[in-house]
Length: 423
Image (cartoon, rainbow, N blue to C red; front, side, top):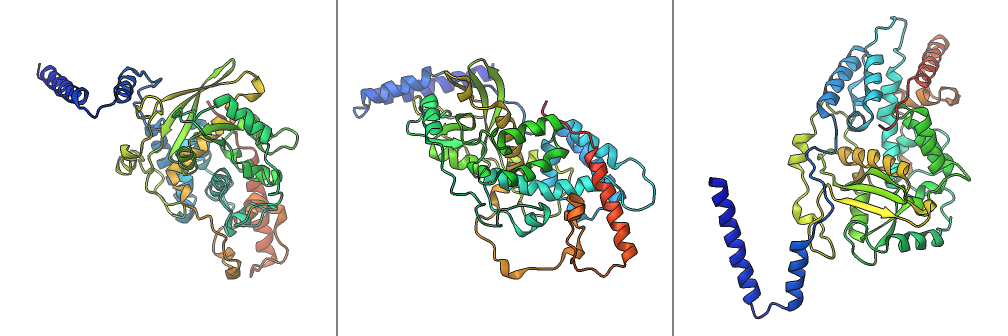
C-alpha cells in the first residue's frame, strides 16, 4: 500500500512538471516532439542482473586452489599478477580448472614442476596480448618474452606504411550509416581488432599463439587465420569494422565499453552493449591476490551515469544490456562473430587489469639492465631452444644442462595441456 502511494506521488509530481513544461512560453513545438519521442521510445534492451564476469563464485574458489598450488610449487609471488587474475576471471572455466588440477597434481621431487610453466606463461604473455589488442607499444620485457618479433618496442612495427582499404571502409559506412550504439550521424569507422595488427602478421601470430592456454587448438587457429595469416586475414575488411561515435570509439579503446555477441543472424549479428566498470587496478601492479572478488571494486569504481551517452533520436540513455543489430546485404560484409568473441574476452580483461593505462610513449633504450638472472627466465620457458649462447651466467655446465632439460620438459608438457574454447 505504501509503495502504491509513493508511486502515485511520483506520478503527480511528474504531471505537475509536465504541465509547467507545456505551459512555458519558451517551450518550442520541437521540444514537445522531442519529449514525446523520449516517452514513447522502447529501446531494445535487456535487464542485466549480473556483472560482466560470469560464474564468479566458482572462479574465486578455483583461484584459491591455484594460489595454494603456486605456494606448494614455490612459485614467487611476483608472478601472481593482475594480468593472471584477469585471466582467471575471464578464461573458459574448463581452462582454469585444468590449470588448477594440473597444478595440484603431486609430482616427483626430481626438479621443477612442469606445469608451473603455465603460470609463468600466462602471467608474462597476457600483457603482450592486451597491448596488441589495444594497439599499445610493447615494452622491453615483452620483447624478452616474445622471441622473434620484428617490431621495435615502443614503435609501430615494420610494414606500418600499409594503406588502409578505403573501399572496405565505405562499405562499412554504408552498411551502418550511423553510430550502431547511439544512432548519431557522421560516425567513425572502427576496427574491432586493431588495424595495427596487420603491420606485421608474424608478430601478431606469435603474440596470439600465447593464448593456447586459454583456447582449444581449433579456436585459436580460427583466430590466427582471421588476424595473422596471409591471404586469410580479414583485419581491414568490413567484417572487422563497425561505426561508432568518436567518443565511444575512444572509450572502447580505453576498456570502458564492450560488445558481447549474443546471436548469429542469417544476414547479420546481434550484440549486447556493456558499460565495463573498472577495478582500480594498474597494469604494472605485479603482485595480486588471485581470489580477489571484483564485485566490490566494480561498485567502488563504477562509471558515473553522467558519463553515459544518449540515443541521438530519442534522448534515452544507453544502458548496459542495450541490444544492437547489424545487418548487411552481402554475407562477406557482416561483422565477424569470432572476432567479436575474441574482443569480448580481451576487452573484459583490459577493464579488469587497467590495461588501457599502459603508456603510449617510446621507452628509453639507454638503461638496459641485466636482471634476468634475478627472476625465472620466461624466455626459456617459451622458446627453450632459442636461448642466447652468450647469456651471462655463473652456473656450471651440469647446472646449465639440468635447467635446460627441465625447461624443455616443461615446454613439451605445456604443449600437451588441453586447450579450451569459447562456450
